[in-house]
Length: 425
Image: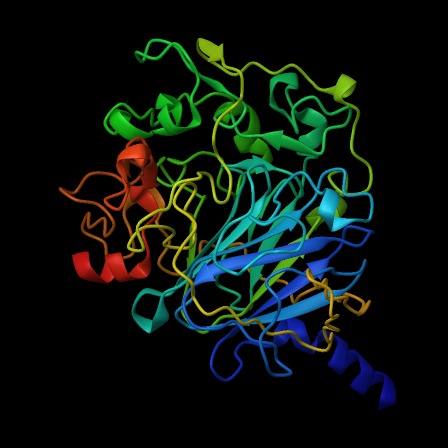
């Protein structure tokens, strides 16, 4: 009887489907070392199951878990790791860093470029939830998102193949590093196609990234390195237009009310945290097509761009690869059976217990409810809720809130919030 009770208590987080006032995202550290997660999003407070606001950034012990109770209206939600030459000190992390550096995350601004990102948009009963694992801004650690609803599909990226050990030398991140802590997206590495009227690289004016004046010239296929890395990230987001390819598997949909288990270093692949390959081990890949390599000095950062996006833009599913930061969402988070201990330091780094992870209940590999196959969204009949004129998702547009100095700022039109979806239904 006692053994049964103990086992029941251990698997309870994975089975939990809903907490009063929100949904649980059960974050699991399978990386074999302490890691530094952070979250940001738009909506009501994210809270701890024990009550109160969870810090937007924290330290999670090896084998530890954290439960974030996110609101039912959480949009443009992201969870990522600060990583890359941290050496046990979050202040030294070079990838995914908070805007203020170190642990100064505020729950609204995204981290610096290069990190793998878990993205969520809670759409309510009418639209359901949208979620994905993205390497659109780069790849650092494998991740998987497992819904509690068995009919919904598991999102993952890098859980079967060690992407860092297949990283092209042109994509090694941070640039100049002796070790491969991350594999950059082509845009952030300064790589784009020739023949589109641009001869120098600029993160804010990169045709391959569908930015600025290139709204209608965005390549929907043959994006540099797409064919290389998509097979390693089959159920993840590889490029900004990955959600409009036939039978897309980039962005998934699940009925509202589900909870989610986010596993860090999914599949036991830990190279981005504990065993990074040497930069000399980078594998030259065929990017496909004719490309140009810029200096990689783009102005990205904090969610893919330094400019401020419109509050109406950004991730339906939180997949705003260029739009952040968002207006303050009054952040608050929730945690289950872990307990944060806050310090009086200027940049408090909560420390978490080493609660041992128990695998989630197996889920079906079937396509989730309301899947987006063939570019037709859950509304059916060719209705693309985030788009004007019935065009496919994926085009980018200049933010209407951009100042004159931000004239080239790009905001992802394909990934607007649920509120935009409702307006266009």
